[in-house]
Length: 400
Ligand SMILES: [Zn+2]
Image 1 (tube, rainbow, N blue to C red):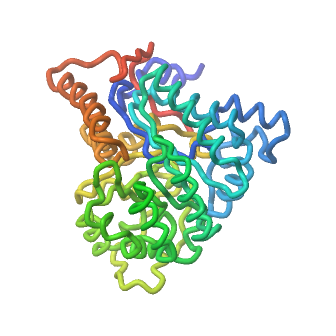
Image 2 (cartoon, rainbow, N blue to C red):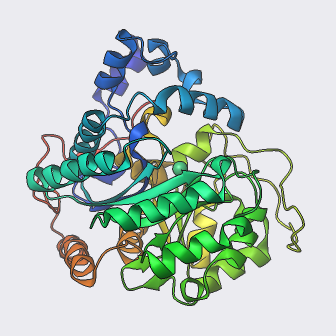
């Protein structure tokens, strides 16, 4: 063993985010939260063109362009789609993050025409109930459709949600290619989701194209824009990262009271176009481009936080980005400048913008209050808010 190996083995890991700190997972595509063990089984059965090297070659989980990511996403998504596979991934992921201190999660699930949507939701719901029974974690579902599939499929999905009447489906979102059309094309669908289906709204916005943020504000139903923290119905932006390019847009977002779901690993691992796409909007791009691909030191998260925009965290696609929500909190602390107090605030924001009833919101907030009051009185809890105890009590930053 070399001298440096020897000293690093003896030096304790710095404390980034304690396991007992209550966390919330607000942006995760559950079909891509596959465990390493399940992925290996699928590869052995030749269910995907992706090779096992994917797990150990660092560059394979970095995506120089969005198309590279989409290629991997589509090669992976279908290998977790039957009811049994969805139940397994949901229970396994929820129990994993509960052990890291997570108390609440909103899982995104993609509606695809032709699939047995009711059976898929039933399987995910059963896994949610089992994970709550085993670990105490509370969970809801965001149903999404692809921008590439267009407004008709979005409407089909919202109507399918209305038909199923699942207590776990609480919001509607849009994913996929942000360059496809305009979010204004979805004005009627957002209105249907908010006004008739009673769903919250949390589409992907301004991860890759800034004009989406402007269009989104215009596409929102009046009631949602007026009260993005409505009872049981909330408005959040998936990502919102590129909003930092315009001071004016940042101010407008702050005034709107809409919450951003920050996904640090996703931003670090998927590159953004060199030219910012403002497409016909009047917003002035007055702030210089920041390089956060491959590194988080220049990520705008703290700018948003300091400006007062409410932020929560999400892991996005855990298997594709080698992450989970415990790691996202640790990355925020270690690389993006967040303090422990900021991390607790991210969880408070998540609960404030969770699509849950008032009683559940109060119960979740109480867990955070109890943790904070213990910390303030100088007592470091040994268990998570849901009473899980880890032999190691501190979350570490996982190596790349
Ligand atoms: Zn996403």
